[in-house]
View 1 (tube, rainbow, N blue to C red):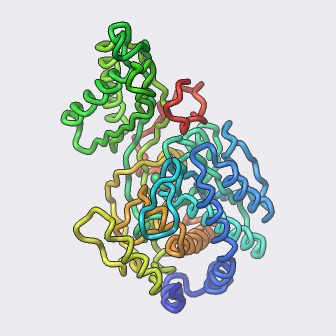
View 2 (cartoon, protein in one colour):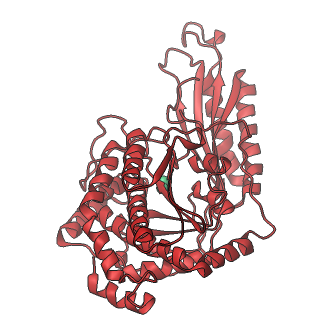
Length: 481
Ligand SMILES: [Zn+2]
Ligand SMILES: [Zn+2]
């Protein structure tokens, strides 16, 4: 960490003294002193790499830490065994911090700069959620200590949020009214740059289309069979043709999660897991209706039957101007990442494996980028939280500049000091911003005002029917239910 630049900037930004009366550098020193403990927690979660709704050890580890630190922990909320809410204090304001901890299937990779052959289909932390959950917990515990020491009023919550990657965990947590009385929610995400912004992203609908036909010997009695795989292939072809006739910002992607078991058996079951995304949820609804027609066409042509399980549905992020400003201020006070000689050597071995002609300079990770209103092309269930509560977020450099998330390179970086450095910046930024919200009611009011302004005249409603439960087994792709 760059200590002296921080102190200089911090003095400019917050006068060198937190509104709590505690010197900012003292507080940040205390966070630094806890680093080995939280690196160990993040490393455990990285190693366990549990996928969505299966984060049993990861969620318990974080919930146990919070409980031991004096939080009241409510586990298994929203009918999700790995979701929890940890709370401390009482009354207003109610400030929430989000934590995620799910990994991505099939992404196993050691913390080395060369791709390893897959030994199994194990998961890996390719989106850095082991850092996300750990930094948020670290920050919540630090803020709690400050609330006690300074006898500050209010309620602090850490939301343990499972299955961000496709499972829409937070959507069900919002629906269970867990955010109802919350004044502000803060979150962060590991990335390749440091930035608090006004970015928005894409709303997302995802589901598993399943086809059922009749099995028979593929050579001896093909006329007696109806192929579920044929239906999947027709569906996929129709979706690929559809790409030409959807609005520009649309994203369509799928994987075939079951295409049969052996070439000499006509598959009587096949499954395709489909994602569709667009910045506007209403436009996306229309696109999804057309995708359902692609499935209908596939089933008609092949004389198979079809069903759809809606797995995910998330809103586009509603940016918050006041919170972006607050987070940007503190992120700038902390500053970015500089790499050691060892980390630089790791980057030099790893970055040539990336498919791009030019890579940004490694020194980009030292910068804090400016607030921008960019359109991003990912999706997150934080989107649903952001339509319910004023929500602010930022990213820190947890992978080298130019490394995309959801790659083996991201898993590798996340298992090293490169990821841990970004996690420390996040823990510090979250701590300073959260404390300012507890100290200054004007900040909370400004966040609400920004929220009301941006949301004016618009609303968001999830398409999950009331009776739908979270798809707790969604990572069992390809198994006929
Ligand atoms: Zn991700
Ligand atoms: Zn993520």
